[in-house]
Length: 423
Image (cartoon, rainbow, N blue to C red; front, side):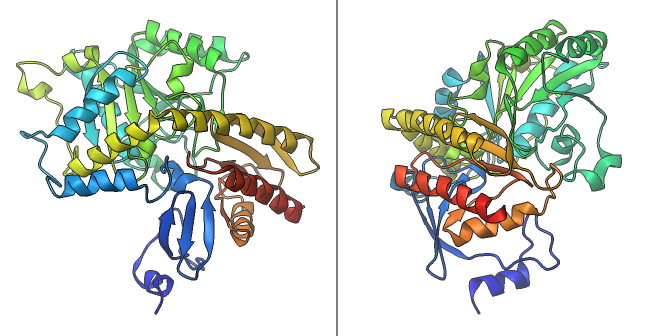
């Protein structure tokens, strides 16, 4: 029995309707931008395996670092103990984050990093005896993860439908535009004294359909939020580590977050790790003689030494000149391809790009995650040797930084060919 058949006897796959589920494709190897299947087929990983693989699969430098660390220390409880990889990673992250951050709190994925941030922000006000500040401000169309706190601050959508009655109340606002910015600022001024924190995906809303919005207006909104004393939480789980062209999307604004959430590309996609960093103002609210003001949160694999080592290795690669130039090249090449999409005969709309990200919609049915065009597009692209996984009718690319010119051209050509087939 092959891997796929065995899988269907025992595995429940994420974001997948189980009835009449297509047989999963067994991947036996990954190298650079390519995934190799059990039957000998190969696919260009055009979405970095759910946006995590920065430097490609099977990178020898990261693998060697993990191997050497595994021979020394693979895991230790992080309450009462510490270790070199965790300390060194925090020392390297804090100076490059967009703002004045002073402490790193480790968890194990994107959802938990936002969960930590929300608890940290709410307890910040509780510790300061301002217990009326309990509300959270968030964007419509947002997505911050699948744990309950993260779902609560995500838009009410197909992802959260079964749990709406169990989610806590959130004040949702639209991403800033010239038309709504003044009304949004008025709402914040009116309710600001009850709001603990504002959580946002800076400039790009990922799972909500790669929606992009204006940095200048976002900066203006953040100024208003900060004037009301509200803590700002930047969810950079997807946008961090060069995806938007800058190291972090928050670097496009001069108003910076108080708390930042990181995961996905943090380890170059090789290990599970989450980071929630905060500034000194937030941290000091937990430094108290009152033991009830302790931050009672943790994970079994908090600051796992192997994951921290992978993150350090990924940072080494990210800071190299050739990687920085590759991000710049990807950004420029995406812009050129976008122009060809705009002027072509294909049924597309909403063309947009920011850094290494490029997205657009197919004019087919409703603009929603459950649009069946996604499955058709994915199958047609994979038949051509490219792995793309549209969010409903939103097609996007987010390739690893090691992508070659030939591979990127193949992705572009594949997109155009599939659009032609669909037409």
